[in-house]
Amino acid sequence: CFKYNEALVFCVPRRLMSKALGENAKNAKQMSHILEKRIKIIAMPQGIKDAKTFIQSIVSPVTFKELNILPEEIILTAGSQSKAALIGRNKRRFLEMQKIVKDFFKKEFRIV
Image (cartoon, rainbow, N blue to C red):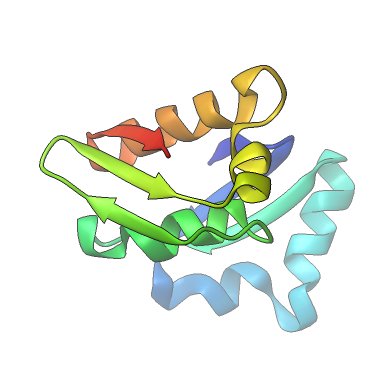
């Protein structure tokens, strides 16, 4: 579980996604109501091969053009509007994403 863009994001194994969400996303709505925060439930990445879908899930509905995975870093390419949304006021979202990428993939993170 981690925080991104004032929402709590829960990572669960892919096979338990339907159980975590519940019927008609009942569990997610109930947790959101109890915690009084927005909740996102996403699939936990199996490794670096899942980095693109994992990052896409976190930042949605904001989109980006491409994601390059290099040996030491992950570089996200975005248009000017998306780039501003991904960075956020005072680089808040960017710093949150840097920490998430570091924790899950042990790589640096950049937006270009």
